[in-house]
Length: 217
Image 1 (tube, rainbow, N blue to C red):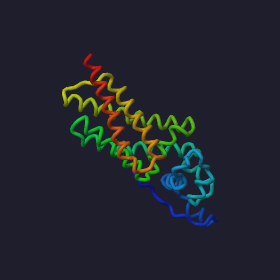
Image 2 (tube, rainbow, N blue to C red):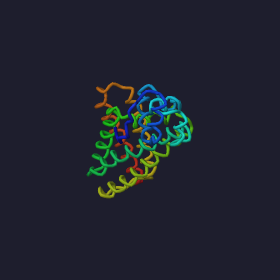
Image 3 (cartoon, rainbow, N blue to C red):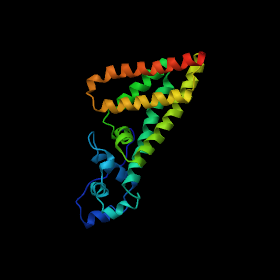
Image 4 (tube, rainbow, N blue to C red):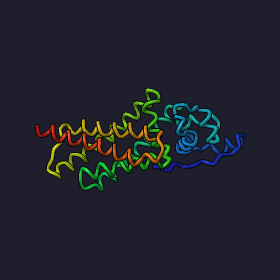
């Protein structure tokens, strides 16, 4: 998992359990929600009572940390985005050329998809099946990715003596493409990953080549 969150122990649902869990943290509730979701279950389908029961607390105790289940889901999306940016950003910073930045970033991203990383799965799923609030949260995280990628692409292009036409739009095209393909990869068998990485890397390079050609016009 990208970021570890405190894993609460699950006790019987009785009065003593509620007493022991009176000081439950946000991380406890986030961990409980993550345990309930899976490849075929979105966080948007969770109920407040389910999460409270999984965390071992009374439903009313949930409100000490979150206003409602939507606020918890948005917190999960934000956590997923922050975590993934650290991993993919580190891969980009290690890259010496525009070709290696593509390969290393795509590989790092796909490795996380296959790592049974529920946080990443939340980020990939909620942008298409979640509520409007969830989709806005995912879009916000993608915008952060785009800005960080734009900065790195400009830096590497300058180091290679090249320029890009509209780097912000290039970064947006690449980010949206990679996330769309990542969502597809979750439903594909792992043995297809190598070919998917090859195709995705090639598509990203084509976007970059086109942006460089347009800058020379």
